[in-house]
Image (cartoon, rainbow, N blue to C red):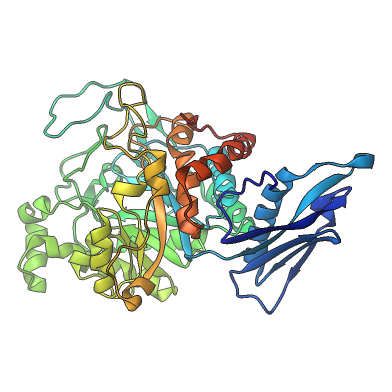
Amino acid sequence: MPDIAIVPAPRELTVTEGQWISEDPAADAVRTVVENLGETEYRIDVTPDGARLSAGSEDALRHAETTYEQLLDAAVPAEDGKVAVPAVRIADAPRFGWRGMMLDVARHFMPKDFVLKVLDVIALHRLNVLHLHLTDDQGWRVQIDAYPRLTEIGAWRDQSMVGKMTHHQTEFEYDGQRHGGFYTKDDLREIVAYAAERGITVVPEIDLPGHMQAAIAAYPELGNFPDTQLGVRQIWGISDDVLNVNDETVEFVRTVLREVLEIFPSPYIHLGGDECPSVQWTEADAAQKRQAELGLTEAGQLQGWFTAQVAEVLAEEGRRLVGWDEMVETDCPKDAVIMAWRSAERGEIAVKAGHETVMAPCESVYFDYYQGDPKTEPLAIGNFIPLEKVYDFEVIPAGLSAEEEARIVGTQCQIWTEYMEGPEQVGYMLLPRLSAFAERAWGSPKTSYDEFLTRLRPHLARIEAIGVNYRPLD
């Protein structure tokens, strides 16, 4: 059998008899969009008479091209300077519609050129969503014309903590180095266009109403105690400084979202919703007044009200709200897509509540976790997800009904960057775990881990050609 190393593996690949001899098999293949295939389906047929790529849509044809390019790596020299391509038949389609990767550019800013390379890596693995985590306590990364101080002030912190943050830590060491950066609207439009050419949707995240200290540092009136001037957060963890629930702050967020929608044509807009402490809402007079006006029994219920108010902007433009799984507990809109991160069980809760759900459980697909011995690996937030565990990941939990399974629309891996200062560290933590994740997201037949490694080893050269770092195989 020819040495065919395709990642992610096609759902069906059959090696047939013979080979195709061609001077330029990449150019000489016939490519067509056809009506007798589903929108996500494609076929590759290589016979001694030639190669044909057929697909049910332009996006599916892109996936056929990506697979075919990898197939050509198995071509061997023939006489007269021609090459011989093994005869194969591939019938393929993805299992899930949402096959995503999240990149946190808020904790550590990542240059635009690196984001473009990440898109090339995503396309190589036939994923179709890049989720950009653009705002957090430690930095605001998107230009907003109506509020220039979000990037003038909120995009920069004077220094960052050194070492690993532990629970209940109160004293910190700092590096003394100013860190920051942001994307202009033109930068982001370039990223969106580059992604679209590769069949990838860029989903922006404006995390709220928690994880907003950088915005409050820029505009103190957004906070619950506006007489206190905050700085952009210099340590990791969760800040108690969350947005207030005043009408003016609701309008601030609506204005921000309207500008974000102008940049990103994605049908999905992520509004975060995770890790939002309500302690300040119990202490601030204005929040307590709002709680009483709404007849709410707990301050934490203000989060659901606030999210519903700002999400009206999305509904007006025909966009859908995406949020982390805490949103299920906040009486969020019924059509919200839930991203289950705290566990697979949280995904089960979301689908049973009637939500379309993207499975993103931290125990399986958080790539800021260690992948080897912490004594020799770069500093990470903790826990352990080696390559083999990612390969064994099951997207759909056992025990769901067929109707509930249908609400699981896809899966996503996450790369949080508290402990990753730049592209080299991100690449090392991301790859090749992303390659294993892509197999599960696509729905590739699960074989032995050794067989996966056999295909993965030559595949690493493709990643290297893009110019992104990766962790060498053990």
